[in-house]
Amino acid sequence: MSPAWPSAQNAVRAEVARVGASLFQRGLVHSTAGNISVRLTAEQGGGFLITPTDACLGFLDAEQLSWVGDDGIQLAGARASKTLALHRRIYACAPQAHCVLHTHSTHLVALTLQGVWQPEDILPPLTPYQVMKVGHVPLVPYRVPGDASVADDVAARIAQAQRPLHAVMLERLGPTVWHGNPASAMALLEELEETARLWLLTQRRPEPLTEAQISDLQARFNTLW
Image (cartoon, rainbow, N blue to C red; front, side, top):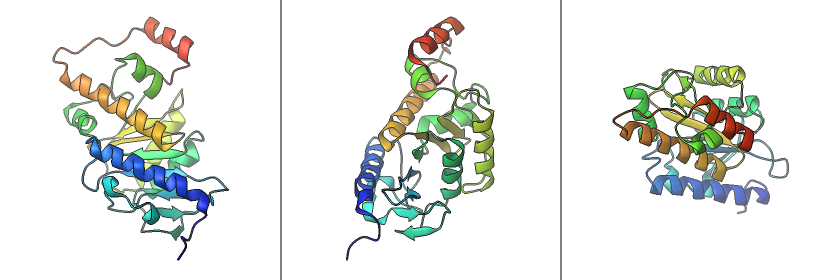
């Protein structure tokens, strides 16, 4: 029996499974925590792909990824992740987003337990690539996993941002990042998690980059910060 979706989805389904496996193998996700979605083009059937509820990202079956329409109604695959409402809201608020990725990455969750730098920016600007590739990451206060009001919180942060946001941090749960495709979203997550690891490992807190250094990076690279 042929799959109940356009063949143009096959490559993106395979890419979601590849990214999930890579994150799992490197310890950036664990157990059944985390989810990935992709905004589909008209050629790919429109709507979104999202990982199933309670799926382990390390062992995704590309044919079981949930396909939902623009209206959120499921069209094919296993039951969609309970975070679908949040993903759809991010796509509606951030036109540049074509992949949304959420994990429970260890160092970023630990950062919220220890205390973030400030609510508007969970980390100070420590490294050039953090400034260039990640930008500002605000903290979203804790809510029960799957709480629909988180979507309102994230939408408000996106609307308030002076520069386009590509990530938020859900207190005690983990980062949610978005980018143009799964590989780019994964790279952004890696940079953010590594910066949190550096911050937590440094006994004497390092000084942030200066305003002049940040301005230079902005002028040269059109940074997200």
